[in-house]
Image (cartoon, rainbow, N blue to C red; front, side, top):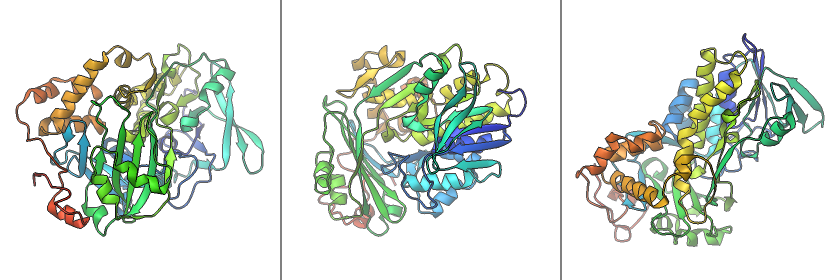
Length: 481
């Protein structure tokens, strides 16, 4: 990169990662060009370039706060459009492999909405700067330059068929899981990247339902997890309140389970979950869509920062760098962490000089490390999981030891307010993953201050009435007010 203010940056992909990266770069670069293969909708509509966009999404508080810092007013805009701010764990009814989670007072939060609404709300504000140009219906063919430095990118206009070279001081790959980065690097003569993959064969099936009146504003989200102690493929289900008075119901599984593909298979699958609460919620709810499915839930991480020589003028962010099982809701927060890192590193002047791209990439890699290890260490223990990894945190720990420790953490966090607070901080990415081995958590694990085990979903009588559930069918557990 140049030793002065860069003149031009090209961001490949108007994903959440690409959009936020373009926004922060516009503060430090004369002009930014965003290259996007899709036509970007003006309304909250699904698009081909976000294959997981129809499934349940969480914007955890860490990502929400970072985006709010970058784009003030984003949270208010989302809430005004019908998104829901859920306090965790208070606004969530969740069944873990160790039992029901007590609904302790919220210590963190997540924004829940459809992915198109989340994307559009961020994109409208993020790309509004006068020095950002968006090239829609344009596909990146490959970078120009060589192994020492990338000088731009060749793009293809999908409507005219014309090819064009965009010269740039910096090119950022934010094209997501479909990135061609490895092929591009090979063509430039860059050595092959190390890659870790933890693939539990996760699949998703989603359908929208009309929620009972008021349920999206005053009824908690519901999450039924698989019991990891049972050594068989996992089955999961969530019901999230989203805009438009709707419930977004996503069912998922690991390798070895067949998900519903047809409408008449959706409800029967919910009966295979560890508890029938989702079946009871959806039985009389009006379906609004067909069933949408996908299989792109593998955890995959590239390590460009490990190369001794990395091309100046090239960076990788978002799912192009590190993609996670979406069930944990860390993808959008990871994108925000990448953008925040770019902003801070540019502000410090670390974008200048030979080797600067490698230094920036190292900082970006550190920013995505926590969501990576959280997702990978969870999925690696599912039966039939396929693992090709060198990370010693994944390969150097005995499986039974890891399972016992995870079970102990879960058993404490669902009944102990202190343990729950720490685990929620980590899962929401507000505390490092290393906190799960801290003295603070170990003290919480040893403490005897645990509430009684819940024997039924912790739903309050007024919540049951709101969704027309008979207390005799779903016995409410005692809940702290």
